[in-house]
Every structure is written in structure tokens, then in C-alpha cells.
Image (cartoon, rainbow, N blue to C red):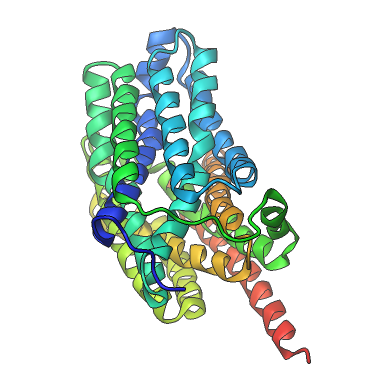
Length: 393
């Protein structure tokens, strides 16, 4: 199938798609740096304010499959616009939440479009370029969330601390409005595929390889979050670094993500399965090394740069899902981001257990490495079953 023609060129279409990822990235991560302000505003404890983070993640996990299934017959451009409009309204509502309970509800609603947006945006990004550039195009679309970690999250967090946490959500809403207008103008119309229906999308759930690929992401990608979730206390406690080092290292992490998004897509277009194997090995080594690197500021910063680079596996995972999902690509692509959020929650939880168990702040490194090895084991099963299927007459 030839690439779709874009109104003003491929680059502008990818910028519009990436801007949505930029806003979603800020909306997801900025609140982590604003929990003290949210807690003070409502006279609650930071852990209680943290329910808003969990609610968002739950929204991602639920929204990705549900919205993709029920909107299967909606053209992908219209779906993207609707999803981003819902995300925008959720953030504006969060900015005006009068109490903690409603804030949690609005964060849940804001998370619902997250996975479906990235899933559909990945398919559109792949549709506007030739087949041999699809993973690179998906990587460029994913640059939005990478850039949000370098510039957007630190800036919005700083503004939220200086003005109000409500201002932060309001600004995310403004970014969402700008994205809606750019999607309407710059993204091409994508025809609904023949036979598209909720039933056809649900067919993805019957494909064993889809589940195995999702499991690789949910388990293996959790290793990154085992380390990253506790980077602030690890730097100040284990490495003895000053408080100002935390946003610096978080920006370094984002720079690594940018490099990973670009190079990972380039590699996946050339050898998808080899790229998946190689990047999983890379992640296990780099994340495991944090056990030693996390004890000093300089080595921790270098290590976190490479940990961030590990997101290079995301475009490859997206392509793998598109490969095995057959005609149910929309649901499979959306579920990828739900799986990554499961990895986020699981990695943070297991890393916290290791720290609470007295193994030290840098013990998150070997927790992450073990998760990465478990993900590799699942991928080995996936490849073995696929090879056996090909060998059958």
C-alpha cells in the first residue's frame, strides 16, 4: 500500500502527532514533581495526593483497549482529534478540581485517551511513509514524549511550583488545544479499513503472539521504571548529590530518550527481531549497572543517559505488534502503551519493595535487570513458537 499523501508534507504531520505526545508526556509526569503542592492545597499527605498518579495510569490501561474497540469504525484522524480533545478537557477539569476525590476522577479521565492516542498515532505515522521507514516514522512521532521529559516537564513543574499546580494542568490543556488544531490541519485523512469493526479488533486478543509481545513490554520495560521512579532519593541519599542535580539528571534521561527514539526506529527498519534482542540485552546491562553507578552523581548521570536510551525498544515493539496482530493493528498498537504503563507500575512497586527491604537505594538496578531478563525469557518463548509455526507444512 503506497504512503498516504499529507496536506503540507510528512514532517508537519509528524510534528502534529508528536505535539500530542509532548502534551501527554507533561500531563503524565509533571504531577510527580508537584505532589507536595497538591497535598498542601488540599491539606492531605503526599501519598494521598499520589492517588492521582495511580488513577491516571489506571485510565491508560482501561482506556487503550476500550476506546480502540468501540471506536473501530471511526476514521483514524477523527479518532485522534477526539482523543486529544478528551485529554484536553480532562486537564482543564483537573486544573479546577475543588477536592481530592474529583482530582483523582479527572486524572483517571485524562488517562483514558493516552494509550489509544499513541496507538493510533503510531499507525498514522507508519501510513505516511514507505514500508522501509515505518519504524523510524514511529520513532519520530514518539519524540514528543521524549522532548517533554527534557524541556516540558521541568518547565511546567517549575511554573507549577512558583504559581500553582493548577497552572500546570491548565498549560497542558492549552497544549492539547493547539494539538487539536494542528491535527485538523496537518494530518491526512486515513480511510477506514475494509471490514473494520469492534469484532475485528477483538480478534487481536485471540492471537497468542500479541499477548506474548505485550508481556515482553509489561515485564521488560518495568526495569527502566524500577530505577527511574526512585532517581530523586537515590541521587540525594546514595550519591550524596544536591537537590538541584535531580532536574538535571531527569533532563539527561530525556536526552537519552530522544536518541533512543531516533536510533531505535532506524535499527528496527533494518532488522526488527535482531533489534529487539540487542536492545533487551543492552537494557539489562545498563539498568543492572545502576547498582554501582548510582553511588556517585557523575556515574549516575552517565548511566541514566543510557537508561533513557533504552526507549529505543518502543518503536521496535510497536512494529512487532503490527507484525503479529494481522488485521487488528489498532487494538494491538494501543495495548502496547497500556502494557508499558503496567510495566511502569510494576517496576516502581518492585523497586520500592527492594528499598523498603533494606537492600539500598541502588538495589533498583538489579531489580530492573531481573525484570529485563524475565522479559527476554518471554521473548524467547515468542520466537520459539513462531519458528515452530513456520516449520509446520
